[in-house]
Length: 407
Image (cartoon, rainbow, N blue to C red; front, side, top):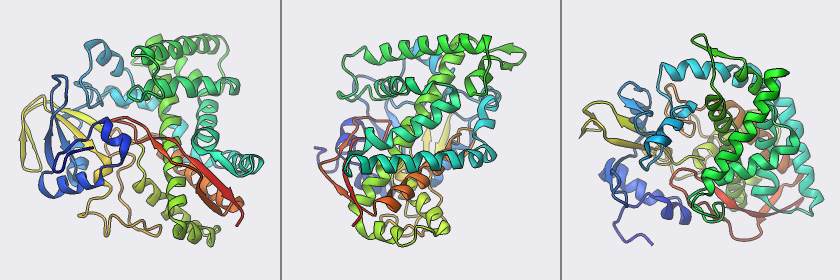
């Protein structure tokens, strides 16, 4: 356990709990806290206040992602080169040009077109819960399925290969958790496997394009040049992982909350057709259960955050989980209020160029699946002890046994 008074925001803490008490103390007493990292790595500044996180997020010229990646821990030069080929690892103006290649697929107009399909899939999954007698391991049986099906279809992955994407994704982002990573090298093996898989699909799309994101990437040009195979691989991985892993954890967090809060669940069940309530409830679940702890940025020059001087090269780690409970922004931040408005949570980032591309799609899936489950099964309770992911990046619930019923 963390000793009294000690600040520890690394992976072992997150495996036990969300450190809300530590964040409250930091926001009050040390909002730009110099946090040590074991293993001789460069320490980072934990940025915990909402306003400071928004300020950093919206100044990519000062706060680079390419210089040090978006991870808490320092990366090798080789890893940095690969990360800089992902959308979330690029700085503008390169990021702007590459994001345009896929942004249309996640536009509000496209999300509205997808809504009916999301709804149908959500209803089907609610039906499978009944087929299982109401008792499920929610993460694998339900939460993982909807975002995985949707993003795989959008990208162009055959439905028969969805479970392979699920496995690769777990092994790549869960490398700090022993339940997902079987050996020290397994995350790298998973990456190599998914790259090889993408290369095969991309070769097919080069010959026979389809109406999917992968075809668009294979035939796209940036500054007059086609994307390299490695660039396509990195796009593919980012979309597969971000498109299913984050929403899976948002869904699991939402249902855990409902199992723990029968008063909130009963309120929503009594107002299943109240679209306005479901819109504000979805935002509150997002505030309450963000799927990413943080993103790192690196200072390109000497600067100041919240009155604290930081030299060029400093690591600033933006803790969205803390910002979502900031007393300066949210009235009664430790109260779950499904009618809260406004709700300026930072679950999808603090704005700026890296605001989450799939925010609208995630909202649609959370609202549709939660609503479908409660319409069919108005009662839900824990059927065992949940287990959290050991990760300093992903706010994940890896095991969530639930019991649904109609009473």
